[in-house]
Length: 561
Ligand SMILES: Cc1cc2nc3c(=O)[nH]c(=O)nc-3n(C[C@H](O)[C@H](O)[C@H](O)COP(=O)(O)OP(=O)(O)OC[C@H]3O[C@@H](n4cnc5c(N)ncnc54)[C@H](O)[C@@H]3O)c2cc1C
Ligand code: SF4
Image (cartoon, rainbow, N blue to C red; front, top):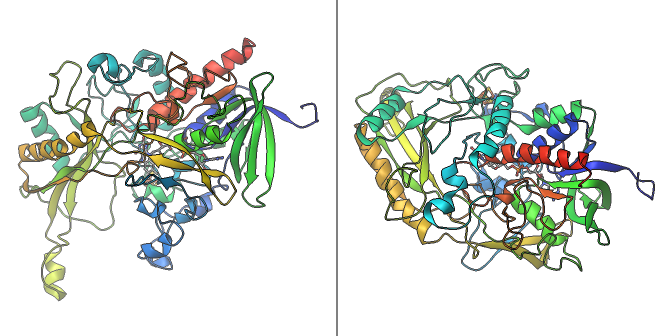
């Protein structure tokens, strides 16, 4: 209780997604009293529709324009569909702005317990010291204030709990993890894997995906129905709603406060300590307060930084915890848009409409600017490919009627690869508050100022060429290349805007994602990333979050927080 007789939690965690779920679990299971403050409404298994056919829906999932009426940005996300669009924010209620000629597609703004993990693609990759120490390797940017050996034990903890299918490969650039048995590769993928290794020395592996292939903490293995982004009644993929958050609630030490849109951090300026949160109740639109001894922001990088900007006060006029002036800068998102697809007519098979539908694909491990390899002249850093191959119906068959029905059954074996490339951390890419625009709750919104630089753009044609080279190595025909750089935001991997570093003058957070300025304030989502690597970021976010929670608890015990 505080002086006014109001409850004071040990820790307030903002956001119940990938990171907030882990923070709530790790802390509450250790006996810490946590309030989990979440902007979205409660998720429920009743909302899961992965087995529901489209004909049961009002618009058969065929009317994107209806969804665009309220979610013009969110509908750009492939996972936002008639089945689940009300899990995503209403873009009219929650807008943002961009500078002229700088489009940014802010997708995946979930407003439901579990955040983005309800719909994510589940690809889960470790980073290596080639990533954590990238600046030492090639001279660009800043090293992370930690190294692989610091994070490795936490990768182990997270992987063992989450359940990740994968194949160990022994490649330095993509460290192996604690994998569950691999989902199988198709014939097309097996051919690509062996030919690419033989002829080009590159590693094509199974996508490392957070889908269980063996029973995991009471969750049965995946039964290959396919559309995980619509939920999973057997809880066979990783969604923090039915895993970490459920565990936190089970501990008896976690109070979930849904529909609470956090506006700002409340400060005690005399002691330079955060003391609570001001939030707007989404249902009543009334302001409310909640109090805690420690604050952990896990609202997704951009939303957490928005909260810090909106918490500016006399002591921190440019944003809370921003004595460095770095807050909001170094925004990164992977560049996409380069790749290739082709056919493997030497293979056949019987296509099936009913599956099984493996909820995973393949991954090509980064092969440019590797640890021991030569420096690539065209750009710094590298990219990895995601893709897949298999047999499908010949949808493009000519004719109609019985002839078409017959022709469509001729199997077509295709294989495709699309890359995710590292985005360099640049001061010029930033977010700030647009004081002229507020959302439906009266909270000032973010303005984006971001575009890809020469290094990212140089990767895209190279992605197309190298993908075609690999498909050729596998004997593919009709190879089509793509080299159309995506606008920032499309990879949905936004990180870096409250970066970690040893020097408080050039960074916002220390290696434990603790504010240099305000000791009882942490930002445990992707905002702390010092660079973005080319791997999907969420596994690293979760591992860092667990590590930081352990540090936080030690500091609490020592009386330092
Ligand atoms: C379609 C899709 C596919 C993806 N695929 C992959 C993939 O294959 N691999 C990968 O690594 N990553 C993937 N990602 C990204 C991944 O989902 C995110 O990196 C990860 O979920 C981020 O975790 P987080 O805890 O920071 O935020 P989230 O998981 O988004 O959770 C944030 C939570 O905070 C809440 N919140 C936001 N603002 C406030 C506020 N002001 N007050 C209170 N609560 C707030 C939100 O409602 C949300 O529930 C994908 C994302 C999407 C959308
Ligand atoms: S494919 Fe597997 S994990 Fe995905 S919804 Fe179906 S059973 Fe669940």
